[in-house]
Figure 1 (cartoon, rainbow, N blue to C red):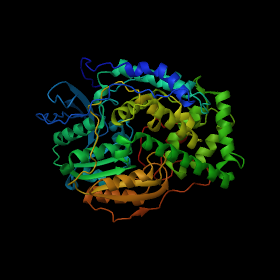
Figure 2 (spheres, one colour; figure 1 turned 90 degrees about the vertical axis):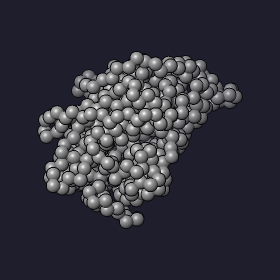
Figure 3 (cartoon, helix red, strand yellow; figure 1 turned 135 degrees about the vertical axis):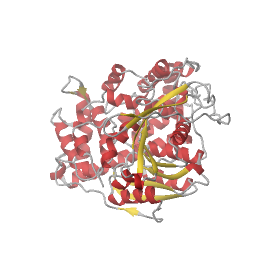
Figure 4 (cartoon, rainbow, N blue to C red; figure 1 turned 180 degrees about the vertical axis):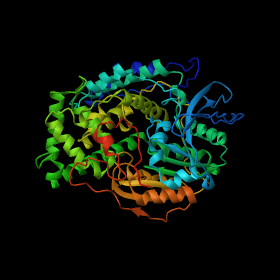
Length: 555
């Protein structure tokens, strides 16, 4: 595994972390009217510096065979772009050359979601399912971004501590949950500092975009051709904003509202809480309407779901390996697996019914594993660098409480749980101890770029549709394609959307304004035994969704 060598120099600004214990008491008093002043952490993060010094050289890529027709290499890039000739960090990269050299147009960068997913694995897992036109036209390229996977993966909680955190968490946290959540987030931050303190300041998305530009040069590409999904859409947005003239074609699928993400994180998080609960609510409404196919809830699936969380909290199920699955386990698995859309609904109903029966073969009763933790640590750390949370603990408490109340199905477990995924990072990020020179703060116009394709799914539980609309309006030259469906992202789940992406990436054909795709696979009559076209139900039903992202076969 590539590593970097660097002597820690980042100041260990422990003052924020030490605030947690005293601040919890003060804040809870304030919430009842007994205190008048909110606690605020000192030492605001450094504003990023523009890298206007002598630019670093493009890395030299020495390709070696790594089986299956793939070639692998290492790319050395600056750890800190304010010192572009200083300490280096090594990035792992992979490619598979164009299947038809006569049709080759260049290199297609494939960027997964996250933050925290491996781009190397993303290419390997999805290459065979890409449409033939993409495989013929491009060398398909991926890499693990700094701090992830094979590129000096950062560590916060170790596996034992993370396992304890998610095992102790509750599906229904109850009153008084905020104080313990804040303290555990402070412990998480301290673990990040202890285990990866010299790397933390440099994992933000501005530096990731600068890495991409060096990799583009190393591959001999004059301009960038790119597909990014979910968080990969934010990386692509930042790249286009920093290097607009270097864009050939960017597809941003399951798009972020970049301004809200970077500058209004509470508003950004709240939209995700509501979108996720909305998707869960629509699934439960379907269960009520189609009792025979869903098989869960006996006509009151919402009531049954609330009771199931409580029952599992009170009496966890013993898993096959001797672990414990409780209400938090159920919520955690639903949060990711509901991303598949309506085609997963019968399988979710079946898995919920198994959970009611305390059947530990239900994929919703599989606790997060070390594979999950490898994703979750970077997921928190990168977003804490990228997002500018206000330092008021009073505001933190107010927002966490509101999100738990207004997204009652899945929200409370995430709001008061340990630092894990996306919309519940606030408790960690408000106390974040590291400086953030690699944070990008705008603008997000990408003035002068080639046309950029933005895709949004109307019922997306992970990146709300309004984010895609907002991004398409913030970019100077963007086209929005709408997928009218449940689930996360569009490419690989919609033949209509996939064709549009292929035509754009290969031939630079931009969909006409107002284009909407409405070809989502509908719920089958029972839990399918094999994955329908364009889906990965076999992976999901077996409980293997450890954020290993796959694109369905729609070729």
